[in-house]
Length: 111
Image (cartoon, helix red, strand yellow):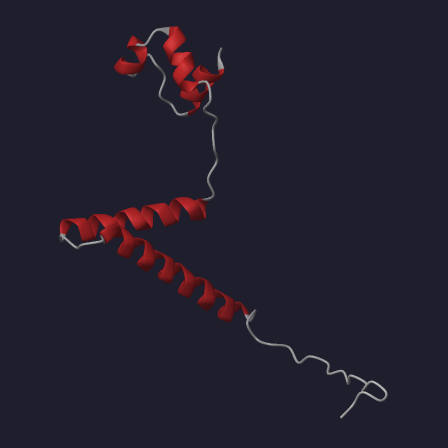
């Protein structure tokens, strides 16, 4: 089983189920899909992408200009605020008192 066929099996898109892929000769199929490798995404990345797509869809339907930029900005701002709120809730943003050190003055160089 070639690397391309393994990739197709991982994606649950076997050539037998897809008429276009099934019509490709084996040599063309291997040429097109030989460089592909399965990639795992973290749940946060998937959630970020779905959020951007949802907001962009809403902005697109309402004919907002620069909708993709606005969707990315809103999603990034919401994520940043959420991370900041989480850090506050966990107490990670409370500054600990730091020790102060006296720097000795150089001999003969102090004014």
